[in-house]
Image (tube, rainbow, N blue to C red; front, side, top):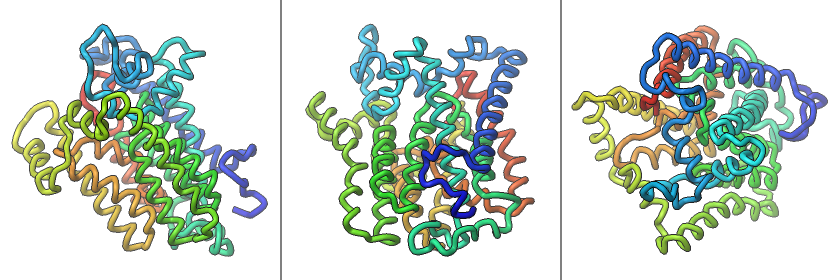
Amino acid sequence: MDQAERPHGIGAARLLHGDRLALRAWVGTRIAVLAISFLASALWPHGDLRDSFLDRWTQWDVDHFVEIARYGYGGDPTHPPDPGLPAFFPGLPLALRAVHLVVPDWRLAALLISFVAGAVAMVALARLGDEFMESGRPAGGAHAGRRGMLRAHAGPGPVGPLAVFALLVSPYAVFLFAGYSESLFLAFALPAWLLARRRRWAAATLCAAGATCVRVTGLFLAVALIVEFVTADRRWRSAPWLAVPFLPVLGYTLYLWRRTGDWSAWQHAQQAGWGRSTVWPWDSFHTTWQAAFGTHDQFTTAFRVELIAAAVGVALTGWLLVRRRWAEGVYVGLQLASLLTSAYYLSIGRATLLWWPLWLAAGRCRRPVYVLLIVIFVPLMTAEVVAFTSGGWAG
């Protein structure tokens, strides 16, 4: 991309060609997910597929987000208290309350947030991919003279849009459609990373602060930004901005302490709601392996997929470190360290949606490999859409 074509920031008014491709992929795959949902409901009226459209998409964590948005962390006063609610960060519930001012239906509000946030995230991912180089370093700063090298890669086309499409048809992409927090997180995290690569630290850390409002994963992003700063920039007058992403987590911790008197209220909510506690990684692996191969129930397949996702994450982290992409390796590696030391593997597959280095790598694959990935992904994504909308566990 020539300097004249490059927007000065993520909010530039003019959409680039890659942006338009990313948005078309986003809208097109949303239509495809809708079609799968309606077709499944018409042909296989099983479980929650018999419910209304909005009810089919209000499953699992969506119910929790809506409950927090409506009643706060005390939950619905007509129901017994749910000790697991504080495990959800307040960013999405606050967004729901804001959107609810103009969209009366909480369920529809959740879907609209994911739709708009996802569009922002996909544009940022496309721009990030189009700035990437063979060395994995950013296009700005000391490497400005190497702009445009990405277009010489051996893949089938521009990296950004290809990365976007691979993400949108990946097995767990259903959670980018549903009213989950992944789309909103990426709408903050991907611009934060793009801005950091352009050395715009104030804007980057403010976006990262938005990400830490939404998910605990934002903490890992905040640490990765520090690593990126230390290894690639070191303009120390900008260093104080790196503290900003930690402030929402500090504020939420103080809120929970004032509410419960417990400094570890978030960790205890994880344990109370899902039985998650910190264990040795080999104990976590053993528990998950037994659940995947030692028993046979509705979660057996899900645990097998968690093991595969964990292996992908370990391989990705190792590859990033070998390529000396330290900051991205820290971002993915810290997530894995947390997930692989939980009492059992949970939602690692869904976490792959947040590993943008994985999707950028997919976008750089040679054509036969990329096509093979898409051929594998599409039926798996279709099955996940059906599972989620029918009320089954989808990750």
